[in-house]
Amino acid sequence: MVSEEVPTPSRVESLAKSGMKAIPKEYVRPQEELNGIGNIFEEENKDDGPQIPMIDLTEIDSEDKEIREKCHQDLKKAATEWGVMHLVNHGIPDELINRVKVAGGTFFDLPVEEKEKYANDQPSGNVQGYGSKLANSACGQLEWEDYFFHCVFPEDKRNLAIWPKTPADYIPATSEYTKQIRNLATKIFVVLSIGLGLEEERLEKEVGGIEDLLLQMKINYYPKCPQPELALGVEAHTDVSALTFILHNMVPGLQLFYEGKWVTAKCVPNSIIMHIGDTIEILSNGKYKSILHRGVVNKEKVRISWAIFCEPPKEKIILKPLPETVTKAEPPRFPPRTFAQHMAHKLFRKDDQDAAAEHKLFKKDDQDSAAEQKASKKDDHDVVAELKVLKEDKQAAAAAAHKVFEKDNQDVDAKHEVLKNVAAKESE
Image (tube, rainbow, N blue to C red; front, side, top):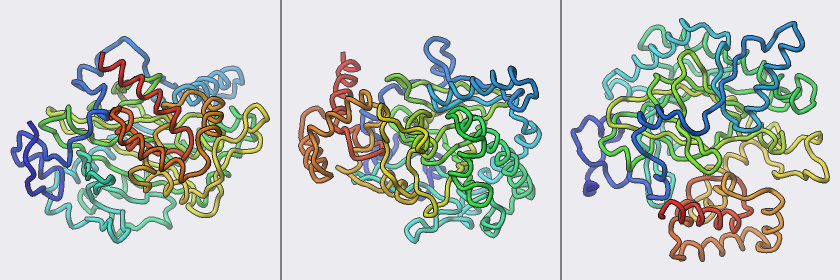
């Protein structure tokens, strides 16, 4: 049973420690979002099925061309087929990574009242600091997490006044780790550029270069949840960034939507999880993938993750497929937008407009969906009208799932048919 509506503490941590046996209805996700959720520890231990690729970066800069190119090809394949990978032998010292984890964990071990001194103010647009996600849908669904969000690079764009003062090592450890992630990002951009047949420095220039590429850190804190089968730590989404680098406290919770199923990421010691974000997917015209993923929770252990998002400047650059990635056979898949426009398009469209987004990982193939789009839609108003009809349809599984993801305004009909098939199979 789900609890009746009760006053909800401002932080999920407070809610989790209140002794509740059932979560408030605001945190209960629609059934269509919960498919594939089981015991996350059992899921992680499964050896059958696809696994996120592991990329050894030992030879990423090797002077031996054959050895170096083998490493590059492995990374390119993972970016093309998955869009996510475990990076091992990445060159960042284990001791530094441990300092970052200890510092972040110590901050979240502070009493909520102490953390509130760093609280952000989302309604006013101040998102840096300590917070909990506000409702982002008409039904008021919330995510089972608290977080700390702040800009960490370049140094002149940081606001150290809002960084945690406790523990004392938080600023030194986070600053040094960020510098090393920035250097690692450059190496990754080089490999991805070469993989597209571009000059080595091309992708990094396209996302802002040394001066304008922004690194934002978000520490995600997922408290124990009394009903993990009903909640999500983070709803299904793709990252808007160019690249995302993730550490975690070795508690499983990340799931990727791959080949029509949710795959649980294993906890790989001394690794960094790297996602290809929407920005690189757009620039590569879809050759590199930005994979749909979500965070699930459990009732046994607190999970913490440290995500660094490498983002282009909001207004300076127009994101669109690079000319070298476009041919007659492969026309542009994405319309030109600034990064700010892409974020607004993806994150802040609500209800019916939200539905158009999710098609990205459920549509058939680009040519089929483009043909269907031409036949079934005249403009965005047509999309909204069609979605209103879909919402009234009894196929609630497909219609509800429309709310979760955002990509562009096309191919709703193609995605709807695929989702109906998925829902039908899971109900058999």
